[in-house]
Image (tube, rainbow, N blue to C red; front, side):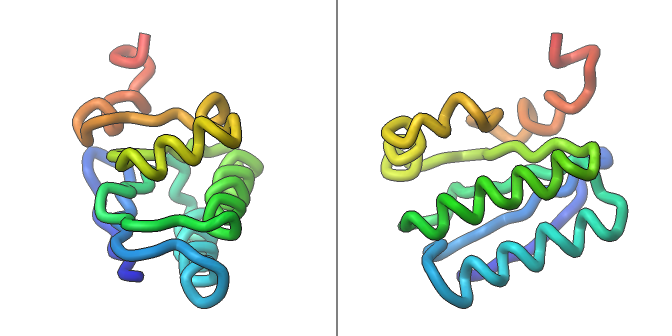
Length: 117
């Protein structure tokens, strides 16, 4: 799994590629999100467009990351879900918890209350 971050209009985009599975991958995702929160970053988007597979531990880590960011007064959103990940979130009913966007522009603008209305 590869993780890279970039900033677009004050929003941190975390680009993830590969698999989010039990072990090193979930730990790296936890660290990446934790580091961002510790730096005071409150607007985070996880770009899952290049994630080929996610297991139950990976789903748990997404929920954990969401909770970590929310507990610090921030927002975490998901971007570019492929069909497998989308279906997994629907089956687990987590689709209703996450704010999920289909394109980066909409994801970034959704943090701006004016555009989000």
